[in-house]
Length: 302
Image (cartoon, rainbow, N blue to C red):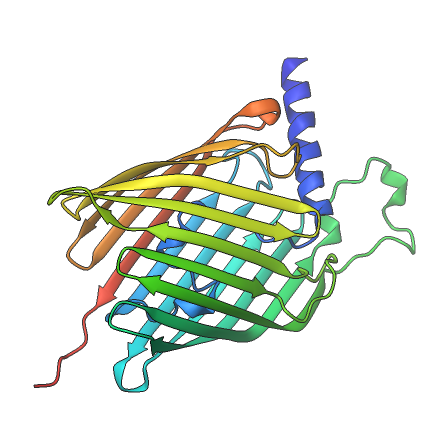
């Protein structure tokens, strides 16, 4: 009986997520490569940066949400510009998936020796699909009727993002809006998303750096806040905690995220694990995220 109740709860959670059609998931480690949410972050390193991000939510549960992000960016010093490509794939519950591909561009203005303003634009396509046959019908008599759809439905639509970042050596603040042309959220369109964030970079001593992070996300009636911090040791190891408060939202329950990582030369590996807290801690905690990134150094002219 307990197992049946657990499975039923998960099904309700999946259906609730699907009802918020095409809402982008807030990933725990995307602060390391933000271009899929804010094109103004394109080219924020001197290397050609390749970033891969994978998330499995409720691991072990059939049709649990899965997300993959790929970012490739480069900085063109002569043009004061960052250019790149970003793609993410979301599998949101039973038969529902979205692929989003964009070219991203950012122009950076040196306001002074310590202040930089970056303005970014992303343009591409969103491909949303829904496979009706993946749903199991309670009434077997519904199969074969004229109203029963047999084919997967796919919609392709143009998609645009706009963002800004204002940076100082010890902090960065950013604001962006994604899916600009989508006035409302539907099964095949995401609706506009607003992101605000602030990142710190404080040298506590020669060996330790403290990096507090505050994130805010708004979409339709959904509001999510993240408050956390990472600590870097000798610029090689890092770890941290992030808290997402519970605003009585069934789709965004209170969470505590534990993050660990390693950075060696141009290679970076990170892992995070989500713990359910608060009034909605009935969701399973086995949610995992992994990031891999590598920076390809460019040849320096004499």
